[in-house]
Amino acid sequence: MSLPIEDYALIGNRHTAALVGRNGSIDWLCVPRFDSPACFAALLGSDENGRWLIAPQSHAKTAHRKYRGDTLVLETTFETEHGIVALIDFMPLNETSGRVDLIRIVEGREGSVPMRMELALRFDYGQTVPQLTHQSGTLRAIAGPDAVLLQSPIALRSDGLKTQADFVISKGETASFTFVRNDSDLSLPQAGDPLGLLHQTEECWTDWASHCVYNGPYRNEVLRSLLTLKALTFRPTGAIIAAPTTSLPERTGGSLNWDYRYCWLRDATFTLCALLECGYSEDVVAWREWLMRAVAGHSHKPQTVYGLAGERRLTEFELSHLPGYAGSKPVRIGNAAYKQLQLDVYGEILSALYIADRYHLKIEHDVWLKHCEFLSFLEEAWEKPDDGIWETRSGPRHFTESKVAAWVAFDRAVKLVEAEHLPGPLKKWREIRDKIHADVCAHGYNSRRHSFVQSYGSNELDAALLLLPLRGFLPFDDRRIVGTVEAIQRELMEGGLLKRFRRTAESGEEGAFLPCTFWLVDCLVAMGRRAEALKIFERLLGLCNDIGLLSEEYDCREQRQMGNFPQALTHIALINSALNLSPGHTPLKVGRAE
Image (cartoon, rainbow, N blue to C red; front, side, top):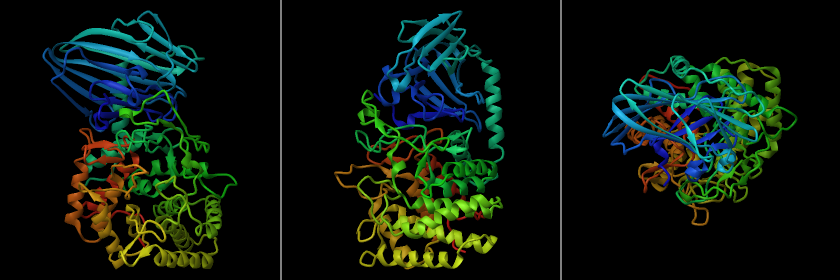
């Protein structure tokens, strides 16, 4: 049976990441990059699709886990009838292209505990069994472009499909297992000293965390979210992926399963706010540089989503050999959203530039000219239907939130020209901004419902409408905004959490969408309803797993996390809400009108 999603922990090296189960099994790891094929894919299938288990041989009475300080080093403590043992998992940070190190250290704490290790490598998403060879206590596995070295002082045995070991660990003893992946055409890599690499890895993470300037009441939760974002950052380019997984379902047994191992522009504004407010301007600069490389070229139409290095073709296909998490098919690789038109991308790009400018990050001339190209295209494109922020696959519509995002693009451009004296058709942009605003108020607002609606002519609500006041489109005390927030709470709230919108039976059900619920917190704080906001925020924090991680959604009926995990947008939203709720702190609003 599949472990609950919240039973997993994240470790990573900022090139890729692994999910470690509470039971000591690594069930997901893509090598050498986040978006590479997985060599452990049990998360989306069974043990036969690849995993790496280290655990007590007998049943553990308890399994307690934690990150060691402000790091991404995971420690799981098993208590058994024979004693207590700790399993320390981490991935050293290195710059060698194609190399991935993963180290597991078993440490005896009490008594003498019989342990077992089982490694089943399955390259290419769990379907390729490598050739295994043993030499001088070292295992080498090769298949196609991948080579893996496993080194340990513990005797290893193999049957050609799996590698196993049985050993006893006593108080004060340690045993290490070092996994090194490299390109198969290169010489056999040398494994480093496990304890030395442990110390070095802890130092690196602790040093980065020490630069956090937020010292409010939610520092622990904010810092864990920041560390998660850092772990989801592709070090060579500065890109931040949405999640390290693919096809974790929005509902158990459902088909709304997507590949999130890519970089969405829609998260730009929230990401910059969170990082800048917490003191990480260098990370923002790296992200902005990735963004400008990704959208560079003659195209005036930026994509919704890009690859880790700015790749544009993210062809989507299905893996029929994997049954999916808890039988949730299909398993998808790639994401067809890269071909969609989403107008909110333009608002995000201009808003990100505006926020960076307010933090005195220089706007280069060529960068500004590129943004002007986008605006030239948007001058007419804003009137077209698009696929919306939620990337619906039911055809383009005139989504209200998309139109507001187009308004944001021109609004921020006007502000930048006014403040920085940048070149641009200021009069024209003001006129377009005003025209979009009037159009949204005329067609996106339903007077019978006293609320803005999901799309023009629709009666449906959408939690994305909470972004209207957050982006400065209308004041928080405007009666239309007040009515919209109340309608969303009344009709989309379930179990104290918000759904994005009401799905039809044909489109499939999904859980509550956690980022939207954080946006509600932000709105309520700005509307002076702090006590109500705080109650919802505390409810959200209570959904974090035991090590502070959140996925994209939550199933209130099954009381479990759903969707890809951990989710960058959820943790970004957590940070911004914590900033908004912190006494005496005035965070940079996502879209504060000035």
